[in-house]
Length: 104
Image 1 (cartoon, rainbow, N blue to C red):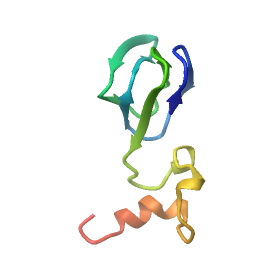
Image 2: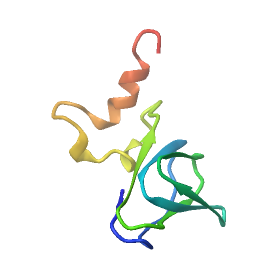
Image 3: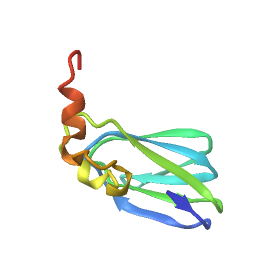
Image 4: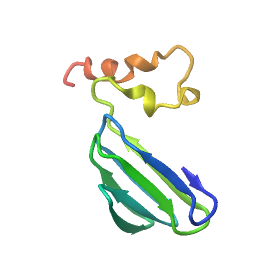
């Protein structure tokens, strides 16, 4: 996520997965369940699955990356941008393929 201006907002949303947001530059306020907390880069921010969260930039040119542990393939369509998947890879099979590996 690129927040070009302070005050830019990633509207409230939730995911089927726990995830970590890597705040690479700048600072944000993260609101979960009506409570907000400020984070300053560099920082990892943990968000629990199914909790609606909203991110507000507190500085211009703030950059954050959501990192998801894809475990079973269910619900990946809301977090995987189709343009990031190489040709020949079925996005609904990504996590299932990983968990079917020996030792997984």
